[in-house]
Image (cartoon, rainbow, N blue to C red):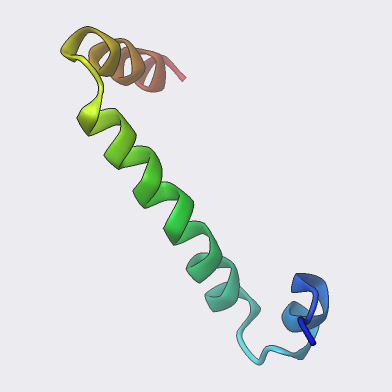
Length: 52
C-alpha cells in the first residue's frame, strides 16, 4: 500500500531530506528540457530567471 507524502513526511526523521529528494527529480528534468531547447528559448529562460 502506497503511503501519502504527508504521512511519509511526518514519519521521516529528516523531513528536509525527503523534500530535497522529491524536488531533485523534477529539477533535473527541467534542466534537461532547457539544454535540449533551441538557443533562443534557453537564453530567454535564463534572462527571465535572472530578472527575478
